Image 1 (cartoon, rainbow, N blue to C red):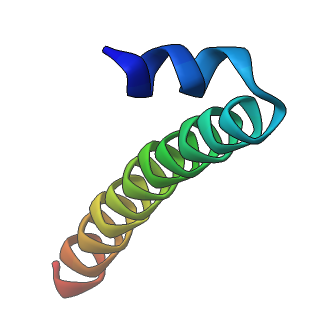
Image 2 (cartoon, rainbow, N blue to C red):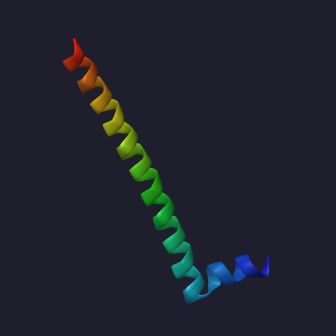
Length: 50
């Protein structure tokens, strides 16, 4: 419990929380971006095969 209190009450803790949130958001963005482009490339390859 003390660790959570320190995380959200100190400057270093808030920067750590912001960094963690940013990295998680970036991870979600890249996973969605890559999956979208994989699907588009697969559809393009299938259309070229026909």
